[in-house]
Length: 476
Image 1 (cartoon, rainbow, N blue to C red):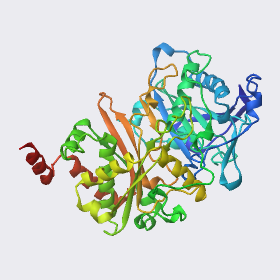
Image 2 (cartoon, one colour; image 1 turned 90 degrees about the vertical axis):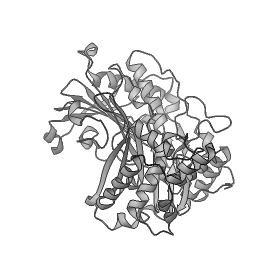
Image 3 (tube, one colour; image 1 turned 30 degrees about the horizontal axis):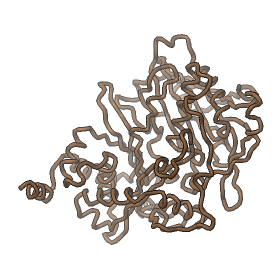
Image 4 (cartoon, rainbow, N blue to C red; image 1 turned 60 degrees about the vertical axis):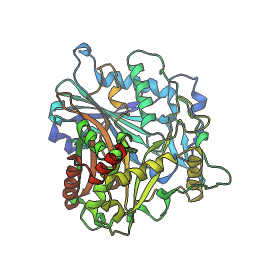
């Protein structure tokens, strides 16, 4: 089921951790004639997939402890065999993306295969820390970037590395071309791989392509405001000025962990009509306000908070079960920086809730039309911040035979072409089983100190006197 032989390679970085690796090309070549005609098709990606903001690679990592019941079985062999069989059903992922006219992306179903790497590391899972969270040490060794494979077009759509650990556990690392699928789509693929690894002849959910379901109208008709695309200038020059004025080595990434009790304390600070808001929105509002204070933009400057909203169930009819393309939008809440900094974080939460509530089928169709009308632009990065909720994504539930994972989620923590403006909320737990929400963020070192102070004060649970008085008045 693999490509033409094994390709051995070496890298000086592996010597530092005793990690040894070899690469195989895993493909669906020779996997039966039933799908042969499909492999030769050219499948256009929908307009939601072709936008500039999704043209990047996303790294995921799933970590497993040793399971005595699987003694003698090699995770590399089990996963490699299952991968080849799973690609028969997900044959477009073994193809290559090309760019057509009007910058529209097309998948050529050529069965050229995906990259599969096996490796061994002289480390144990416990050495990654009590609370497993990104960024992980030796990340670039646990997910080796094969030279020439990182492109969006004319490159493998998936790279998978299985690294055996000294303790008997192993790490399944995945690099995904985001233009083809999103986190729910990747999870669907991994669950298919897991049931096949455990003996099934086919996935429990049969994959559905149908990418024509998320395309623009002809002619395009933009009917809604989409502030996340307000400024179509080249994104590389649109970061907050403080990011552009410091050397790259002074940009630091740090993860902050929130306990359930601290979330309860945050809710106590909110007025009644916002107190039952989703945890993700509450934390997003906190981070948006704290980050803005830390970066100190001019009070009159507009700042944006983009949050991910899934659209699979919003469309009529809904996207079919088994659809694994990108299925989300990121509406932007907008505020003057001064107003955001001076007000209680409930003000920010109200803005976020309002924007998310406005997302409906027409909003999605209007956005698809806008991406075509504007040449498939990147979302704005001018004084912007994007947050994503991975806490219930379910990657930790992927069981390829060794039980549930001890960690499943993003490998780096910040997922974007411009990671400085993103934060992905992750589920975390320590060796005692205590659960947290991990919130990674990237900031200049000086701003990071200010951000940490602001967040600590907010999580301390001190209630805004005006809110307390308001609740008292309503109860009289």
